[in-house]
Image 1 (cartoon, rainbow, N blue to C red):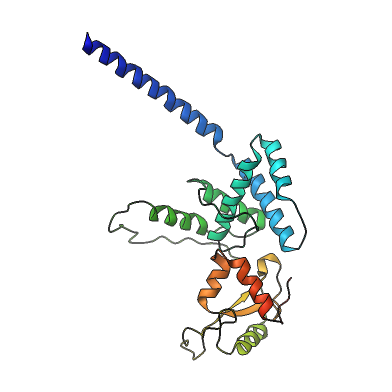
Image 2 (cartoon, rainbow, N blue to C red):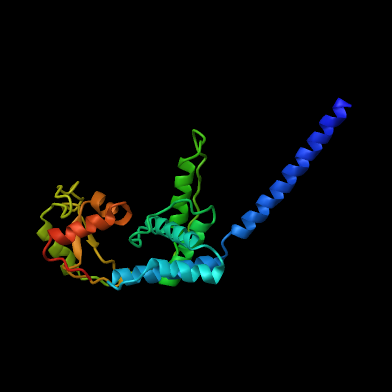
Amino acid sequence: MHHEIQLRRRHLCSGYAAVMGNKCKESALRNAWTEEELRATVAAYLEMYKKELNGVSFVKKHYYAELAARFQRSDKSFEYRMQNISYVCVLMGRAWVSGLKPAKNVGAQNASIIERLICELDGQPFSGQAEFEHQVIQYKEKPISPHPPGIEEPSQRYLATTSYVRDPHVKAWVLVVADSQCECCDAQAPFITATGEPFLEVHHLRTLADGGSDTINNTVALCPNCHRELHYGANQVEKRDALYRKLSRLKRE
């Protein structure tokens, strides 16, 4: 008798677990974001970014409310999804919308989709950089094998790229004025190149892809650390503002 009761309990528990498992799956499917939702959210994000870049005022909450009404989700869900987009922008080396702090819980597949949509809507070639870096971050947070197998013979991938015509006089002028010192941190160039030149990188404060000019008013000579921080750093906005205050030749575009 006791054995029969135990069997019934096990059967009930397994049945309950199956029901709850199905409910969780159904909930996950309902909560999964469609490409239409992601596309609309990325489009709204890029619109806000361009307005901010051009000094046009806007209210983020208006964008959240409009998307929420359209797709029957909460305003907060769109705010958080836009923080995910900021995270993908950071992985791509792009600037992000102020106030939308990058949030990395973007979802297994969404990082790649968001990156593709950003490139598509912004007219830029897709490289898969954000997807790769997101995977690196995920793997760093999990126990990994002591020696990953890697790829013995990496395959080639051909990408279409966009380049811009630049004035060599501008780069030369900025490097001469910098006089072997980073114009951000004042450190000396980290090494001398094989051609005998102090190594500094010239950076456009408003990128050429965002409509920035290739002039001395928009370019600075940086050490590699400061250059990477202006692309990927948590304090990139503050660092950029500090350069505008420090160098009188710079003009906000």
